[in-house]
Amino acid sequence: MILEPEIKTYIEYCHQLPELYSQIKKAEHDCYRIHGSGTFSETGMRGRRKTSSEYSLKALELIERKDDLIAEYRFMSKYCKRIEKRLSNLTDEELKLFYLRFEKCLTLRQIGERLYISKDAADMKIKKALVRI
Image (cartoon, rainbow, N blue to C red; front, top):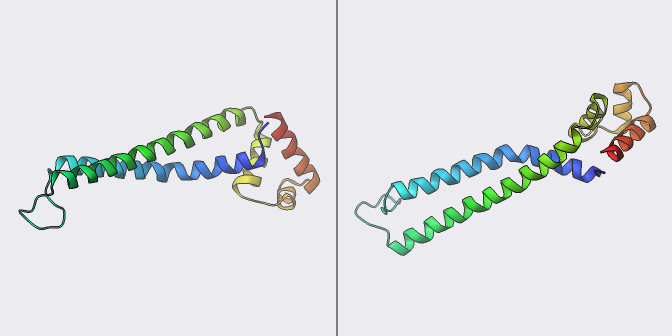
């Protein structure tokens, strides 16, 4: 059985995953930029080299940030896949109800008006679908 907050979390994660992926790519680019650029300072001061400890700390911070982002991405991705597996058991009508309720954030009354059913019938169908998965 999936609860409503799990569905809402799933939708939130699905919206966050593309942005998180682009942050990971940016972090990877920054890591490669540091490794590829040598140890020169980015301040524009020619001839000044960063000390090895400055360079190492900056590189380690970037690598740690990238690893944290990857771990977060994997967690969200795994969560979404688990919910999607359960959602695949729903009928098209139930998926439409979930879409209207959780993605579009419509009230039960608005869902009932769109589907020409009462709000109680819409609520009952959503609850039955939640129990079924």
